Length: 78
Image (tube, rainbow, N blue to C red; front, top):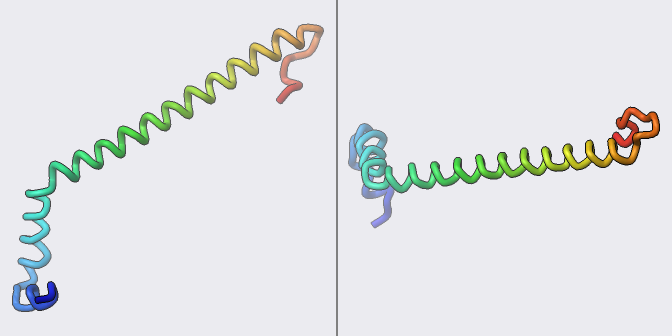
């Protein structure tokens, strides 16, 4: 028996309201957990990118100020 045949005789509110509500009731915790994990991973990735960028900025700033102290402004490396 195909799914199309099962849902053929049902009213529209059952197909579009009641069944999705039951799916959310049963799997809602798993869906929220997956979304929370994804958001957590994206936040950690963004934090990593910001930290690596900050580290590169500090190292370049330190290297340009220590090697270019003979009158240069330190921005010639950029």
